[in-house]
Length: 262
Image 1 (cartoon, helix red, strand yellow):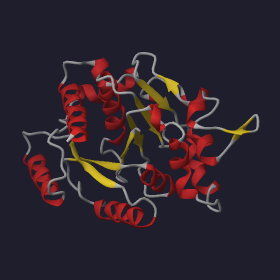
Image 2 (cartoon, one colour):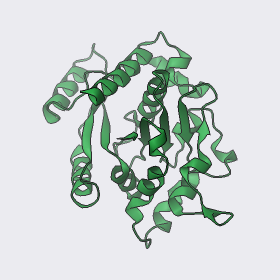
Image 3 (cartoon, rainbow, N blue to C red):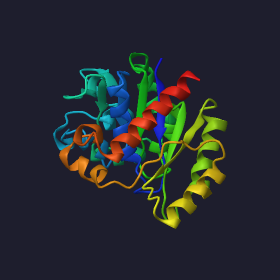
Image 4 (cartoon, rainbow, N blue to C red):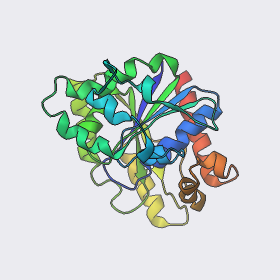
């Protein structure tokens, strides 16, 4: 049975998609069968693996809204794409249409559990399911948290880093109380860290104080190669395995696998 990890933070630009892509890639390199689900209408996790979002016949939009094909509901098994260069990695792609799903599902029954139902059909095929969440706390994110076993929270080491976290943690608490009692905090991940800056060190200290005992030892350093890799539609371990970014995400994947065994 696969472990489902949501990468979530309603604040934009904190490294959610970068983390989703590179964590998934590093887990698959370790020969862990992995599925990455793109639940962000911006579809950056989709294009980050070289998939043209505008050329997709079906996407997570069809899965979430219950679209049918030849009389049968479209599921993740119908839309997933095997990575062309990573044997153990599958991608469930997104498209800009997903932005309309929140409106279309307003009056739907069990609307918060659409993603959970979709994942149930395939999760036994994977050891890890990584979900890239949108930068909001709307219905799509509630679906992600309802389906997940745990939530990984990327936090950039910059000013206002902790802003909005109270709202996110409150949403997590509400989901735990009403929709998904097994949901836990996987950990907070410090991103865009620059050890030369007092600000980065101060933010790291504040985050460790806020998430006592739930901050990953692995830290993602500010790294130009991480910013370049998406333009080549590759995860960092394929773009530049010698970069600090590749080392950081390999360490994160190792830490998650070790925590699973503990």
